[in-house]
Amino acid sequence: MKKPLIIISFDGLATEDIAYLREKPGFKRFLAHASGSAHVKSIYPSVTYPAHASIITGCYPRRHGIVDNTKNQPERYQNPDWFWYKKDIKVETLYEIAKQKGYSVGALLWPTTGRADIDYNMPEIFRLSTRYVIGSLHGLGQHSPPLWSRRKTGDGIARPPRCEIEPSHGRVG
Image (cartoon, rainbow, N blue to C red; front, side, top):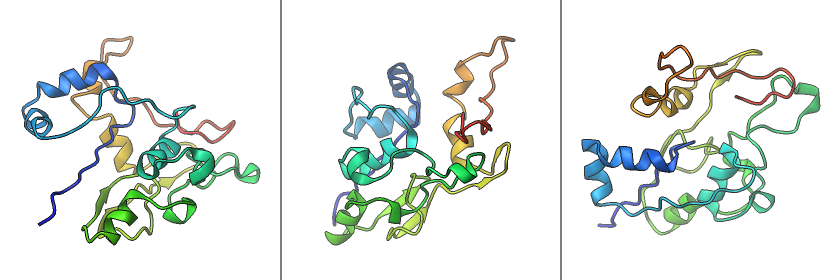
């Protein structure tokens, strides 16, 4: 039986958070048997979808084709399409290579995996409104406790940041 390969990405995780996670029982057990790096350097600029495409392909954005979270659609600047689908990646991915080698593959909320040949796949695709991103499981998950609960706002109350689309250029902030 083949050993499983599990790739976990915490979008926006800071180096300081890794030490914190090592103290949590679930992560402590998981990390004791895992390989990883606390000193990963991202692409520049560090944007979620291009960075995740680079992780899964080993290529820079100019080669894999995912150059931003959203597509360049000036006519739809307030609500452009996102790079949700595998067809937008121009090179072979790690999960395609794994499938060719006989591995079973799963992905949970990994960017740009819509309609990918993945055995167990819940791609990151969410409904957009003109003002707010609605229904993003990833958006809720990436800011859920314990990580964001340690960060306080000016009024001393811990809360996740709002996920809004800025009307000027359609980016999620």
